[in-house]
View 1 (cartoon, rainbow, N blue to C red):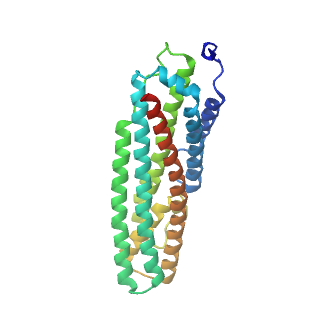
View 2: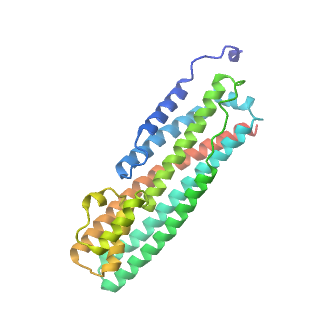
View 3: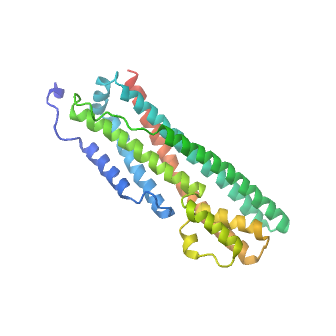
Length: 283
């Protein structure tokens, strides 16, 4: 019976997962720069991949089998589903925005139909962005209403292995949700809501003198939104404006591309984790 002499040191994979968690926590959580957010998503990928390996271990499956009746099992399963839901919301928001961006870009490139067609397409884009933002705020509201911490660590009658494992899985859920939350806010362009309204008002009043530092601080999504709104309001269709708009759309598109790949990776991993959990608990 190997299991009689339980190792007192945590498994190397648990240590590795905790390292990934630490560096995720250390990375600037609220930053709205796409570079930092990409970095965060990559850190999350490392963490989830590590957790997935950990869940496959016979050692882990063993712990789970002995704990099947516990209420935290349901919480873990609920949590795994919640992560997939949020991930799906983010994927849909990106996909939706990407499709509108492509429509708009092709109209700008064709240069046919002139200003009328362009303005109509811009308005269409802004309308569908509203739909995306609404879906995102709904997803964020759901997140806030469901995130609750459980009192597992207080169960002193569990061996340290079990406690370490459960608390790691809970920490992973929190870290994943918080990263998705930041990403959703970034996509909706609401990372800087305070300066955001100030910015769009100042744009209308003095469209030529927008503080560059403020714009640079906003997400690529927020920048495109602001540029298109000012385009609709000012109704001027100068060549350099169009050029500038095209650049911003391209930046946003490459942003979308990166995040889509990251989310696809996470989605597949999260499904595997959920399936593993279901398999163990249904034995």
